Length: 292
Image (cartoon, rainbow, N blue to C red; front, side):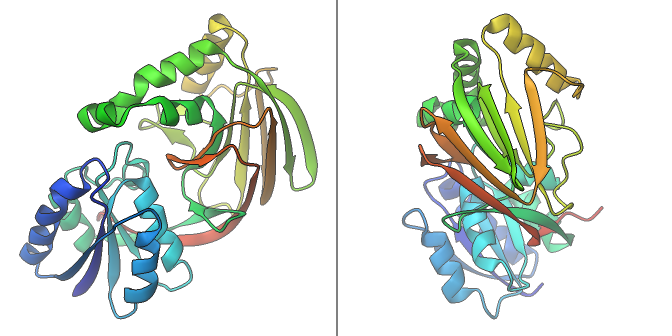
């Protein structure tokens, strides 16, 4: 790795603060780094589409939304994405075992390897690496103040997540998974590409893999705090035996519609109250990883 492009999002939690440190880390590693700062949502993808050819890799410094802008723009080019964690959740960095200190992340990725994973592609062309969801997880993203995210990082989501769980607000969902129709009441619905969160503390569903060429529908339902506790306890124990509160399905093409319409998030980015159409792109994401 001799020359890289760095795309930094100053609006992310740590993107602006760590921009200079990232450039210095590349210099110390003997890698030429050309850096560009994004100015608005979607700008990262425009930068990559215009400038990426000729570089050995593109690094994204920001949250998971910034990372997916870069990954989506690089899909099919053969160029890898280096994830420098500058956001709140940094779920993709955590999944890949990348250090959360940006300087350490640069050192680890410059000297590391690479890994391919499936991506999900929404109807508007947006890609996701982790999950798309509505209900509890979207409420958590929507209701967490920016000030709390900047101060506490991922822990800042806990109060809003707890409130959403305890509200136990249910809605009707109709999902179509490779032609199979699923009608349920739900408190939370996720289309998952990754198996777990919080270093495996909570597993979303059975057998989820980001390398199987499939996406996983996970429907969770509870009506009060006691039922919520039972469902969440089962997720922490990876207990997916048959239950009215847990429904799972796996496929390459998924459609999810809710009534009334629910706010939707994709890898931590709010999309609005939209109908979800998702297709899998097998092994379309190429990521740099630390050495084993």
